[in-house]
Length: 193
Ligand code: HEM
Image: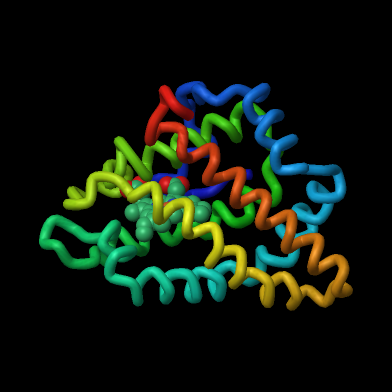
């Protein structure tokens, strides 16, 4: 999968994540991740792919309407940066399909670590934004699991699958996003991760 999205790093030569595939396996077993979840997540990816822009409209509306959240997208003037918001938006859309379609191997882990660093120590660097907020507060990262899980359900249902399949996709999505935040929390406190 190749893409020309500015700042998108999956195909770059990234540093190896401090999170190993063995660490990942323990997280997956903690989440009770199963082969059925993997199949449901793959189906979710196919259902969501054509709806990415509508999903992003909803999530961006949610972030934009909460000043404590949009503060992470402020530029040096202390106002939301349209450049920053739109640059991240393109990569966020790609993340939706990546999460569902990419194999969760070492390269994927390395990319998770890159995104984790973009929420912490390298925040703003990719898009050349000198944001006054130097990192995304961890508590909002954790709390964000719920809105992006609750709001995904109608999009999953729009694929025309039966109710049990929609439930399975929703559960798999919830687990996958929870896993994501568990991985992205690593740079916030590496010693205690
Ligand atoms: C479940 C939680 C979250 C997910 C899945 C998520 C997802 C993403 C993705 C996919 C990107 C682009 C990564 C890339 O560069 O390829 C990103 C960047 C970003 N996100 Fe999040 N995010 C979450 C929570 C939050 C929260 C709560 C905020 C703050 C309100 C936030 C603010 C940002 C900012 C400012 C960037 C740009 C970072 C940079 O400067 O490179 N994120 N996020």
